[in-house]
Length: 166
Image (cartoon, rainbow, N blue to C red):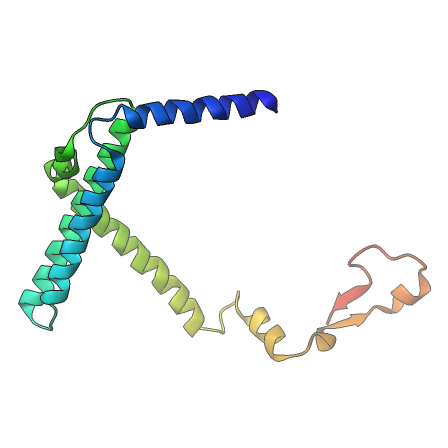
């Protein structure tokens, strides 16, 4: 136990040293990243509407924020590996933007498909898996469970054997 505590303290010291040795302060990089995201949100807010241009602005800002997020992750990984990185690391995500866009579209598609799975199950309550649950919800539990006749004659019943499903 004590060796784990000393190991944790050593890891914290190492992390503080790496953050001090960083070429760009992590606070400054986080402030820059957050500021750029706020500017993108402001652009979305100012360009809000229902037209094609508004939709284009929203999609473009979403793509730029996704690429900036990848650049911020690259900065964090460089700090973790002890490498020196500068402000331009935030924009390194643009070098593989195509793969990032494809990956995020795939993630979005899978999220929509899994969400549809829950919606479809909620709309069809008479499926084989949902029917007992809905029946239990509509009917009190005393209708389904009654003491078995053999349970009264035995002084000790095994757990679960004193009730039978009707």
